[in-house]
Amino acid sequence: MEVREALDLVSRPVRELSPYHLVPETVPVKLNQNENPFDWPLPIKEEVAAFVRERPWNRYPPFIPDELRAALGESVGMSAGNVIVGNGSNEMLLVLLMAFAGPDVPVTICQPTFSVYNLLIRALHSKLNSVSARPDLSFDVPAIIEAVRRLPRSLLLLCSPNNPTGASLKQEDISRILEAHTGFCILDQAYVEFGGFNALPLLERHPNIVVTRTYSKAFAGAGLRMGYMIGNKDIIAELNKVKLPYNINFFTEHVARVLLSHRDIAAQRVAEIVASRGDMYSFLRTLPFIAVYPSDANFILVRVDGKERLFAHLKDNGILIRDYSSYPMLENCLRISIGSKSENDLLKAALRSFFGKGA
Ligand code: PMP
View 1 (cartoon, helix red, strand yellow):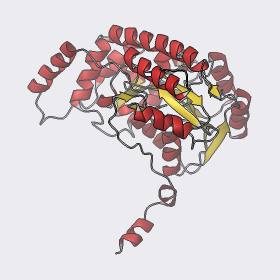
View 2 (cartoon, rainbow, N blue to C red):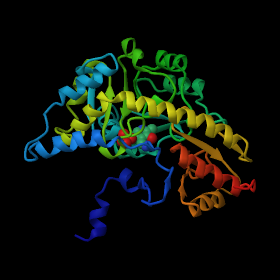
View 3 (cartoon, helix red, strand yellow):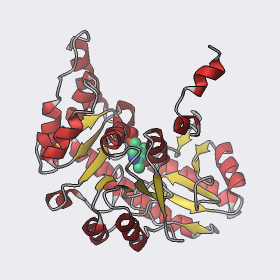
View 4 (cartoon, rainbow, N blue to C red):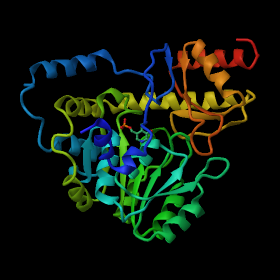
């Protein structure tokens, strides 16, 4: 068989996708992936290293990581049965879509949003239904309600706080949406520790919602690949059937528990990032951007004339941000992650020099 013929066998929706890609670059100030700027203290890493040295590598991790599930459940006032852990929240999204999506189930997402949703929905042969944000990039709640009314028993995938806009849904908004919705709802809360509201109390009245969370942002653990989801126990039991066995390795499982026991450190740093975000937002508003969008997450989206020049200028100054201008509604938009104090100062200086205010 020719390679061309083999390629023809790949399913049509997958062949038509553009890959999710990010060119790896090493720069002194990396503000392009919404990572946490603070690594964990060395003594904590050494505690983990001692465990890794002793733990046999030839043995599988626990079949069901119940200790970690229980610890995470307890941290949000629930129990192990409400939690599934996995290889980043991306994997949790895949598990959820495998269980709820499919050719007969349209999936509604609110654009612009995290592009992995589009990839997974199409790869699983579901029909994508998009609701656009308002011109100020806030959620258009009446349009979401109308969409779910029009599509009974469909799947709704919401991201709050939303990447890359930073907008979040209010608790009463999501309650109104859930009152109107007869299908399932996945709520991605990868950034919730930085702002927005905690959706978990909704679970009591609405068993048709599962919330996904991650260690990659507030928990400063992007390198671990650790995410989790929280939902009604009976729904979680069903989802466990499609999750791959041993999807989380022993290292990540152990580190996740250790970091959870040090969550006071993470919380302090989140508070610092949130304060820096407020400061950065005020600063950006003094510059001649077309728009600076308010954010509940650890990044800020801006719209600017000459975005290529600004992107290049920052890069020349060793600062990498993310270009979102090809996304729907995001012409000329760039997303800037909040860094450490010194990184933010370098960014401010480079922005001042770009806009001619003297560094
Ligand atoms: N959801 C959103 C909204 C994200 O921005 C990201 C990562 N950027 C993820 C999920 C996936 O995060 P991870 O797989 O690292 O948990």
